[in-house]
Length: 176
Image (spheres, rainbow, N blue to C red):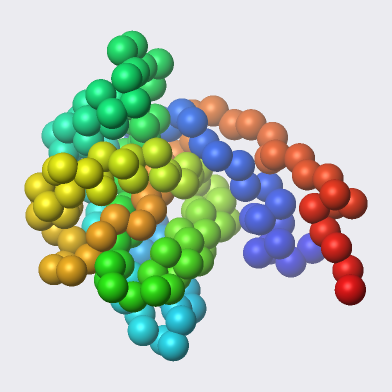
């Protein structure tokens, strides 16, 4: 079976990482995978912000996310203590930005799996990054002017594994 198809088949959300940092080569490969994603009209508007897992901005974001969701005692932070979190932002005026960001983050997730790394696609901080502190976080995360958060992905070396999710092909696929 093709290596790309194997990575897609094997990939699952990783919710536990070792302390091992990504190498420069690993990180560069993941960024390249995201940047090589197709975008509508080849606009190439996706911006990637790389954040180390110990950066205090992640704790601030976690605190706000929890307060907005009335979570008193979280079992884990939103990025499961991954050593690296990539935030994808895009032009807030461009109609296709959310789709383009989704394509880019999937490229990163599949590339991570192909490299033997774990990943977790993250949407749960959208309210925190879109609310009253939107400008503060956009500045802290170095989003370009006029850009907004679209999606994020935690990446690192797997400390836990799980089986990929199942699906019901008959229910989920129609042919015309």
